[in-house]
Length: 287
Image 1: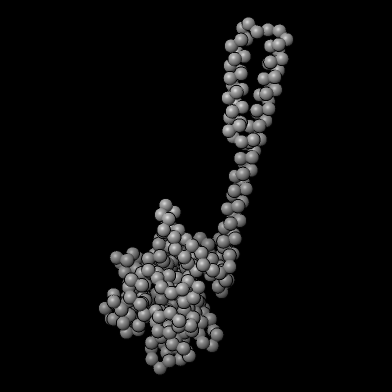
Image 2: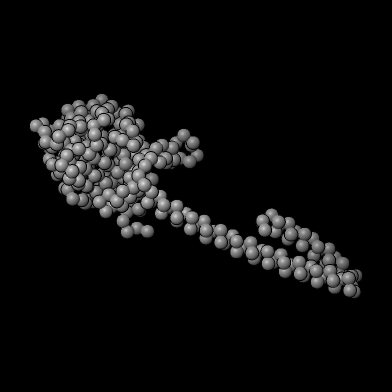
C-alpha cells in the first residue's frame, strides 16, 4: 500500500471518528454498536497497514544499504577501462574521463586512477604548460591526464601514489608513497607531500619534493625541462624523469630518456611507466 493511500485512509478514519463522537450523546442502540464495531475493525486494519508500511520502509533501507555496499565492491573489482568522474554534480560539463587500472598491481590491489602512462613512445611528452595542465594523449594508450584534473582528484581526500616501471628485459619494479599532495596552478603544482616511501626500488622522487612542475615554456631555473625535453618536477635536475624522451633499447650513451635513478640509473631509458593514484581509504586491509 502506498503512503498516499494510507494517509487518505487515516484522514477518512479521523473524520468518521469525529462524526461518531459528535453523536455519542444521542446515538444508542443496535445501529450505534454496529457502527462502533465497524470503526474498531477499520482502525485495526489501518494499524496493520501502517505497521506493514513501516516494515517495508525498513526493509527498503536495508536493501538500499546492501545495494550501495555491493556497488562499491563491484567498482573496486571492476576490470581496467575508461570511466567518467564528476567532481561537481551541479555542473553538467564538469565530468571527465580517466583510465582506471583493475589489476592487482604487485599486491597493492585494484581501483587505481592512472594519470601518466607510457609504453611505446607513440605520444610525444615534450609539451607546453597548457597541455600538461589540461592533459594529452589517449586514455586507453599513452597519456597524461592533466595537472588540473589530478589536483582536483587529490583535493577530495588523502591519496596514495603508485609508480610501476618496466625495463626492456621484462623486469618490473614499483615505488609507493602514502600521501601525495600537489599545490595549485598558482604554485606551479608543486609537490607538497609524498608521505612514506615503500617498494622494491629505492626512492627517486623525494629529492624532488617541494619542487614545482616545469615545462619548456615555464621552466625551472636550471632549464631542466628544455634540456631533458619533457615536463616534470625538476630539481637540479632530477633523480626521476618519467616524462623524458622515449628511447628504445634500454642502455643509452647519454643521460636523456625515461629514468628512475634507483632502477637502472641514468644510462638506461625505461620501456614502460604508470603513475597512479587511489584514495588512501581504499588501501589494503581497509573494509
